[in-house]
Image 1 (cartoon, one colour):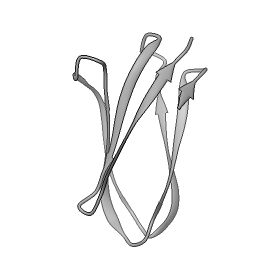
Image 2 (cartoon, helix red, strand yellow; image 1 turned 135 degrees about the horizontal axis):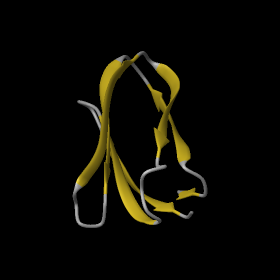
Image 3 (cartoon, helix red, strand yellow; image 1 turned 180 degrees about the vertical axis):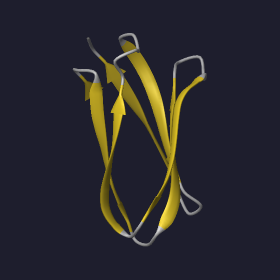
Length: 77
């Protein structure tokens, strides 16, 4: 995922209600951002603001009690 401005939106679908945690890390593995929330089953989105971050590569982890999804983000300012 490439971010060309300061915000990005994560879109995801859930089969049932569950707690989620969205974490963002830099290349050194340092936790830069963490959000927790409860979502019902269905399609949702979560917006992140990268205005205070430098251009570069970041990693995200979207975790629930049933599944963990990870990915790479590239921030270009």
